[in-house]
Length: 97
Image: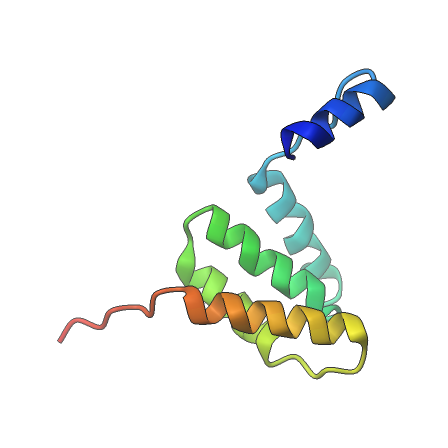
């Protein structure tokens, strides 16, 4: 959370809410367990979280799912575009021959 959001949150809440990427990952994975591939934005967030955790293989997997998710809503379209953009920026895995 950026510093200015923490400042605003500290004025509203006693203590600003805190979390970690690992905790977020747990929630996103739990959502996938309950209803796999139910929401394109969840797939995107899994990919983005794995990027933050330096797990590019898993990030690539979820971003690919989000990038190829059938677009039926504006939210799907936004998630699809962001996932495809992020996917193009991740270095391809090197294959040793």
